[in-house]
Length: 357
Image (cartoon, rainbow, N blue to C red; front, top):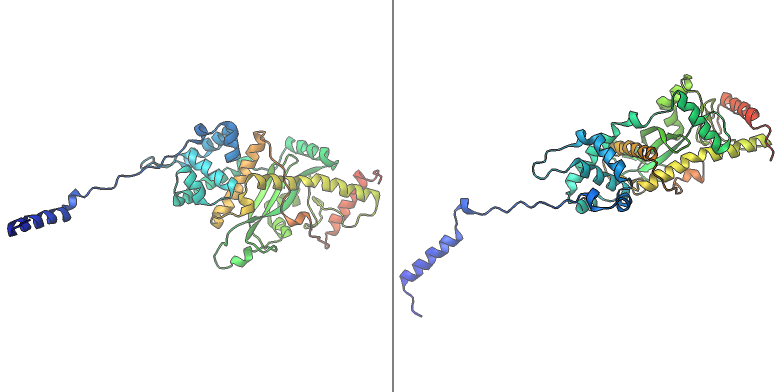
């Protein structure tokens, strides 16, 4: 095939025109919108509760409660308050990674991180409304509920601490968050009633802090000390026995002391059942909270609120044994308080002296 110079020039010009298009003519990649499911429509009631650990009715109540605080712009495919709440609860219930939960719901990992922080803080803001110590006529109801468990009179709460696993918090002294079991944690103090409802919670102490120190510094102890609360708490031997916090006897001798110990253990067991229910429902407590320290503290309060809402909503909780070693090896506080020990003996003689072995 014969080709002259003019043909070559024409070909070169065509090639140049193809390789160097006008900048204004370069096509832009179309924006891709990820499909996001609506869990309320996608799942029936049973499947919904299995995935999110709460009923649709309760989920709607939580969404309505924090709707204003977590609403974002709908421009660019904004994530609805409902999906923000459900993905956060799913993340905490599963104890998984943010990216895994985000992939399922069509949300990026960075957005999931922001959503979790936003939602738990919004829920935690309702702490005073959902976590309160009984007052007035309610105190007598709580005492009666406890009495029906183990025949212990005047009991208004059971107290204990549990370790919530967290990631390394960073900062100047991260080692202070390592507990005696060797992992980073927050030592969370909880007081509950006979129905396993959380009545007081302190979720800000490092894992190395002793239970008795947390109790000595909390506002609830000061209320008992000042006589503002008419009743008695039950605690294990990690606490000092006082006139408002009774602990078991380490070496019971008489029939009355044996009966007291049996009644104490049976009644105080409610706090261990609470920890079992709480941790079983929200697996992040077992697997560790892979969020910042401040977000972890807010999440613990938020999950305490959701737990109480479940009880108010008459939702059943599954009992499992707590993984806390304190159940098997309770720490013993031999120092004691002489006035507290004397009060305990008076309590035993008054209510348990007629018990036989």
